[in-house]
Image 1 (cartoon, rainbow, N blue to C red):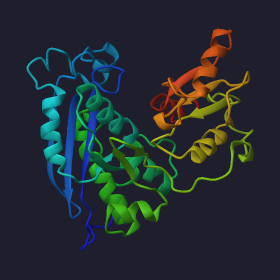
Image 2 (tube, rainbow, N blue to C red; image 1 turned 120 degrees about the vertical axis):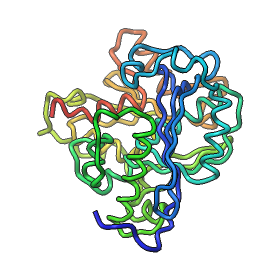
Image 3 (cartoon, helix red, strand yellow; image 1 turned 60 degrees about the vertical axis):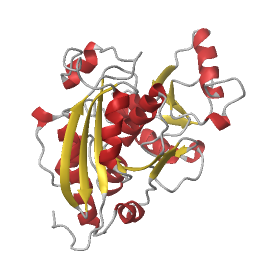
Image 4 (cartoon, rainbow, N blue to C red; image 1 turned 30 degrees about the vertical axis):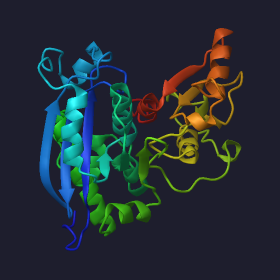
Length: 320
């Protein structure tokens, strides 16, 4: 990997959260790496108690990151930790690997704590990495290797380590594309920066979006052992990790059938971020979700999954 560009204006804070349970708004640890002019200038991590009411720990989460309730007993509550986190970020753009998850943690935890979101701009190494490399998986370890970043599997899910790796990946991707800033890197691969405020949000996704699901060519020669092969998949809400069109293309390559509406043929409904302005009055879920729930009540086997679960299935390389 070539060296840092002399005039690089790459300024951001890479961030990684670990959560206590399956609810996104339950952060129990955070890693932060500050990059100024393309150089890592600070790396910091801390543990915390999740917001009140969602501060229980699931065994599954503990098995991933090793953080227990006893370890955070005397740690600051998220609302107090956020003061330090916000000061560290200091208005810079955020970078994360699978930023859909980490920005979702921020939004949910702030809402649970009654704290305004403010104004956050962010980029995702996973989204950008997909536009540069052809890999069997775009998990952090795969992308680190492709970007020429040293990886230590024994430290994966240490928040400070994962944030540091994400920062190094982003710096190296900028060098690879010979660009000088986060904005120019995103522009060079056709990705838009994500943006969150209290009133609105938009994901860090591929800029181009066109066509409809029926125009997507399904790969009939894909591996039939993949869990999505031959399944009809519908999306509702906006995805953080990729555009709707890219999601259709990704599943079609695996032999799945993208569709725009929930019907009796639907096998999977992937739930993205719901825009309240587009929901019917008095509802907090989309009409697609409500129809899926009705069909499930009648005995149809529709699996409803989150974007994070969808990415896990999408990156399943054990069967391919």
